[in-house]
Every structure is written in structure tokens, then in C-alpha cells.
Amino acid sequence: MNWLEPSSLEEALDVLRANDKVFLYKHSNRCGVSQFALKRLSAVTPVPGETWVWIDVVNSRPLSLALAQELGVRHESPQLILVSKGNVLSHTSHSGVHEETVEEWRTNHFSA
Image 1 (cartoon, rainbow, N blue to C red):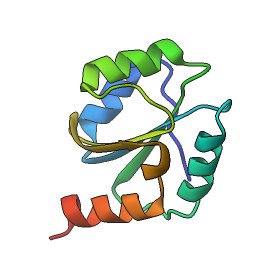
Image 2: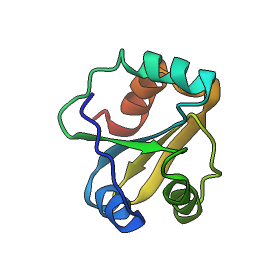
Image 3: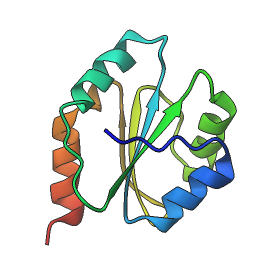
């Protein structure tokens, strides 16, 4: 996975607003569930036009919390949020973060 790792709210919002298909993943390296979710996401093959964003909720807690407020999605980790042009299309957390969710969202939101 080729992750973007924004370092500020402005940088993150620029990415979220400028792209049609953004998968925003919030990860905690202190959480076993996050480790399992990351392993499951490693089975995902990104497709052209997708942007994958990584937020480390431990080292970037203020950014993670600001994004939660900005997007109107309660902060959790692990958490996966699908954003298109700054609008939240779907979100899930904990055991919902896995490769099948990504495939489902691709089908539901981007299939012609």
C-alpha cells in the first residue's frame, strides 16, 4: 500500500477534498485490533484513482481528533472512512475494517 501521511489538518483536508476515492485509515500501534485490521487491509490491492491516507492516532492524536470533528465521524481506531471530494460516503471501525469492506464500498459507491 502506498500511504499518504498528512502532517497537518490542512494537508489532510486538501487530500480529502481534491480526490474522488479516499480511504482514510486511522491506526493505533498500541492496539491489537488495529494490528489485525492492518493485516487484513494488507490484502487489498489499490486500484487506479484511489488515494490511501494513514493517520497514526498515537503520534498524531490532535490531527486524528480534528479530522473526526471536521468529518463528523466519531473518532475510533482502527477506523476506515471513505471520502469523496470531502464528503464522507461510509465509515466503519474495529472488526469492520477489512478487505471485504473495501470491496463492498467500491461496488456500492463507484461501480457504473
